[in-house]
Length: 132
Image 1 (cartoon, rainbow, N blue to C red):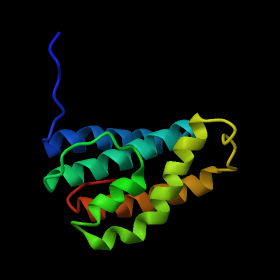
Image 2: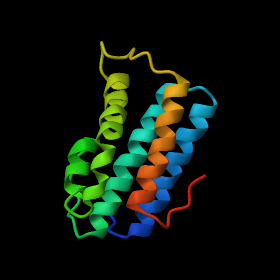
Image 3: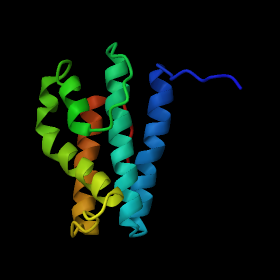
Image 4: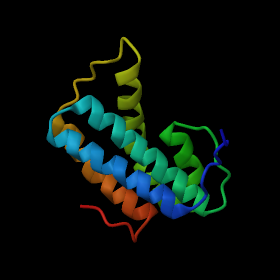
């Protein structure tokens, strides 16, 4: 079996990342909040990594959105306004996976607001990215 290398092709990153964002919205619409949370976190993580790779960053095994955002600020300081979003979405992701934090009282209305803010964040990272 051939060992695969991680892609540094931004188009590859955007393709899989956009699919995660679509899954987050689909699962939110179906009121499956745990799955929507997961895919929202995954999409933001991959959008940040894609943005960083585009700027020459060497891929690292980092999952914390705020740590990735710290790296991204070196290239685009105006991203600092998205710290709270990154911290919230990271919190959802961790709460869903590790007891006893699995009940944050998250509602679909709260997550819908985060998805809308995430769209703005993504457009700041990749202005050419088309999101619905």
